[in-house]
Image (tube, rainbow, N blue to C red):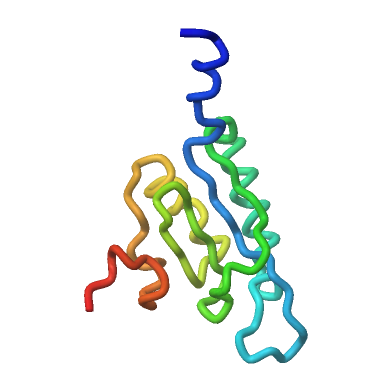
Length: 123
């Protein structure tokens, strides 16, 4: 197998954490993640991933609107497509330890609206 084919089949990151940093006009009824502290939460994810030596395999990125701001600071973890809402700085370590390291999503933070986490929501 050629070196190109080997490199082409390797993933750059095993997991991607997208943190909504959307900004809406002040007073918008759905609010926005940025005013709820998402930039600080993203920085916390980035620094902890680096401290734990995970930053080569896991990427924490700022995201534009994830269309879930009404659920508080919203993040989505890929490739699993697990949507979390109401995330605070205090939740970052639990998400990293449980979901990122041990592949066990944090149930209490999952958005339960049927548009999100569709496979986990029972009608």
